[in-house]
Image 1 (tube, helix red, strand yellow):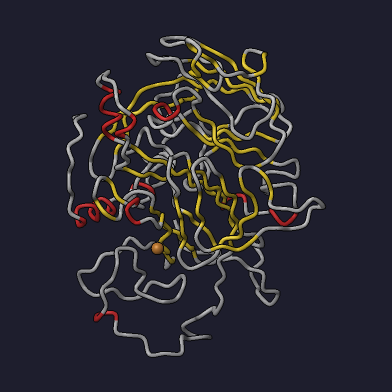
Image 2: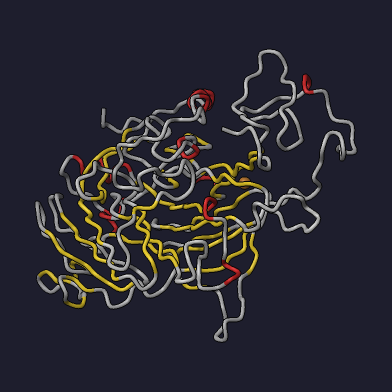
Length: 438
Ligand SMILES: [Cu+2]
């Protein structure tokens, strides 16, 4: 079952998998690590009591499912006694918190955690220093010993923003095996802001994670078998978003058929309203996406159809010394290894087409003559389901729009050769409230 057989699935098979999705998967309530009722889409935070949040991270081994039907052996950080998960829990804390992370190591080699972007990190109360073995650097931070060791890291989360946490011990191997996660520091202005700037406000239920990573299957196979692996042979075959490949990426958080991959990547929003003549005022703020790259390659991510406003990078707001706004609009978001990018974006229903009051001023083709994709609403109008040709099926629920959003290095949106998988997801735009969307 764990042998890495390259299974070249036909694309239509992958489509069949998609057909089983978005069918309102029930939320798994057994994952106690996250909030009691995690959101179906968006960031599922693991929290602890402010101002001294404490997280117990235990290294575990486990398996994840990949889009070519491969089952991949992984290492990971799990919360306390929770089962293996990939990636590690999304730790959400508040600016100024004294964060304590207690690492318990069950793996057969020493492991550590580093917190890039955090200052004055302590390990067992002592400032973090590298470890040396026989005079050679062996870890960027003090370790928890193999097979049961423990160590406690602590730091004050001084800066709001998006950060990685990851192994600092033989990171090429250990981070590649899955020892990483995301850390979100909320600013003192509140959880609806990315930074302590009024212009960083977003709609809280429209906050999303895009944690991009990669897998060399031969390294994982060697580690599972207890064999050495020459990292000069490192070659990535799988790329993931939030620990999943498309189409699993668009399934809900905690989808029941992905028990060790809790985080979905579907970006589900409402249109943004800043038009004073608009009668809708329930949605005055944009959506937010936190991009992170824990791999070794650039990930040039691009959401189709709109620019993002880049407001922060590596846990620092883009601003001048006097607080001048240095945010800039960009189409492709090219996240380098180890970087994080904080992006807000607005989706406008610019023309507000309506079949009665504002019809599209062209003759629409007969739906019977069109090829309909599996998420078609068979109508160009937001919130309206058109007539589908007989025999056609759709996963569309309420006339919502779908826009693809994906890594634009096309060789990276594969799973060992199975194209159009990997770091791909959808932007889903729901019709204005009240709507019929489940
Ligand atoms: Cu594209």
